Amino acid sequence: MPDFAEPLARLIAEFKHLPGIGQKSAQRLAFHVLRASRESAQLLAQAVLDVKDKLTLCEACNNISDAELCQFCRDPNRDRKVVCVVEEPHNIVAIETTRQFQGLYHVLHGALSPLRGIGPEQLRIRNLVDRIGAGGVEEIIVATNPTAEGEATAVYLSKLLKPLGLKVTRIGMGVPVGSDIEFADEVTIWKAMEGRRER
Amino acid sequence: MPDFAEPLARLIAEFKHLPGIGQKSAQRLAFHVLRASRESAQLLAQAVLDVKDKLTLCEACNNISDAELCQFCRDPNRDRKVVCVVEEPHNIVAIETTRQFQGLYHVLHGALSPLRGIGPEQLRIRNLVDRIGAGGVEEIIVATNPTAEGEATAVYLSKLLKPLGLKVTRIGMGVPVGSDIEFADEVTIWKAMEGRRER
View (cartoon, each protein chain N blue to C red):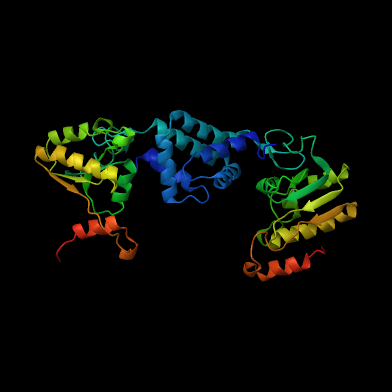
């Protein structure tokens, strides 16, 4: 015998498809929706649909956007000379929280991974080259993840873009601020040694 | 400057209204919906609405139901002589996981709490008395929570129902199975001592 009435069981199943949501969490969320007003359920349902229907990719940088250009590309106050390349749109959020970077972004939507069949043509690199060709870009900061795939992508981009006559940099790797060296793995410590600076 | 395009920011805000979902989880869920197919977003949105539109309370026991009677009340194989009284519909799920209880349920939708202005008339007690009046019920198991409110409700129900000539029992309280007595609080240990059995 099912423990829940059909619509409730179906909502629990739908919530379980979301990442990090197990049976218990899904039940708690479903009961919350059940207790909430019809209006707030409507707002949630509409927001879910709007994300699929009203969002597109920015023509310039491939970030998620509700217009032809995303909020960064259309902002006249951002520095168009520096472009930070990231793997995924949510990486932009992490960089924006620093409130230090004033340049633009470019989203690859992935990283090179020969094992998973992801080559340069699967990534959104072409319009990056177009942007550089249009002029005005002086530095590309490669902020792909510090993983094998992210590193391979960084090396590829560096080889591809340097001949175009601009500065290509890679974000620094090392021990995280506030952590203890004792807990860092050997590759991280080696990267930190390599990336040492005089002061 | 907002970090997200409007529809994405709105979905993140909606997910944050759900219990146990903070900013980071809400972002992860929203990006998941964004990457998922239009069809699965549609299924999620529809499930959210259906829970509000297609569910009602069982006329007999106040459980959440998609019909006049819930799946327990309309099941001819359940034992109608025993009724287990719980505070909330999700408490039924916990009891059903044991697969031991074969009786019916009655959901109060709350517990007595004078401090929060919840008296007997705010709870769904009237149709419990009606059920008992209709005959056939021999035992009421009070499975309200082992809290001050749940206990007060249990005492109230016992006083109300015993004069109707049926057995009113309270679920056992004590140290949880598989735990260590050392970690039980003094009230639980005292309840365990009180509830001791000869063997």
